[in-house]
Length: 533
Image (spheres, rainbow, N blue to C red):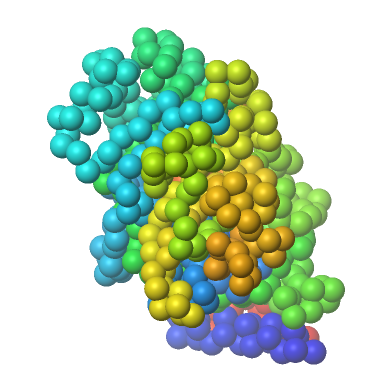
């Protein structure tokens, strides 16, 4: 009963919001499934584009959780709202135009990327640190140390290659490359299929960049960003992982960008609502289909209900294979590709202790780096260990700041670990040099607060030249195909913007068509009958 009341309120809101719209203007109902970066961006740009073009739309944004932002989320050590750290996507960079422009437009405060207090970065292969660098040292000294191990030209050639490739990609934001109904075609147009079709290892070999530099520095970057080794990750993802200059985040959490996008879209937010099925129907007044959605609520997960509004367009803004949705006959022109995703375990915990030197094979007098990136050991293969983590067993380990323990009122270290499987008390005991109980925290534990989360964080971006295109049916769009091409907050937002533009361009091409007969309130007669009945 409560679910039906919520749906009735939703429909009432949809009807009321368009009561002042001129009766001769067709109204388009658009459903967006998923309120992460892509879905929120699609809603925001749909509102902007349709307002500018003089169209009227109702946007309904369905989200199965109780929050906006998808994989951008934060956690609070000791459950203290005043102490906050990013659990999901934590940074973006100046070339991320949508995110950067949104931060300015929304007047959000930014922060520098999370950094450790020790300033020392190390690359560990499970046996030893193959390279360490003190980021507080003068640039000349740091450059000399890098050159002594990796040569003078390899870092420079890598920087030039990365910049040139990113410049190619950035052309996708503007005409004639934007918008794009086919991601496969656009990758070819931009010459980026030459990078997606081979591994990162091959890209560096073809560009005569030293294998040692690629193995140590580049692979450390791909592992922390994409949990993948350069022998299996495609070249474009490899280079994107290196484009981190000027990285920042939003103070209080990057999710605020997408929350504000959703708010400014004036979309009806159906939170705690899971779409379980999409069905195609026919519109008697036009040759365009309309779609009905079957939903469940978080408060009644076994109670499936038909959402009372039929939609002209549906944007699936979540990886389809994890959505649990079914698509009825005729909804999709062809099946949406299921791609393998990385299962990434992200663990954040607090402790007054520093890492144990013995864990890394150091002398007791040596303090381990505060940021530990990893690469493969000399005896490892690209698929050694769990999910290619190799002898190191994890992808990265970092001290990301300080938090105050409310019991002691003392500052403690906050650590973040990216790993292919859940951390164990044994691993943490060795890491901290003190016994961690099965409960992780407790009176005698060196860990005072603990939070673990599992993400399907990004696809396993194997080399490929064909990608899932955004147009998947008549009036049906899909955003997650972008992730096999480039998986970032920015590119997900870009695909949301892209499908918004495609929808509005379709509306422009049929502007002269009257579509469904509309009432004075702008709502189709068929929808009114469905609502009233």
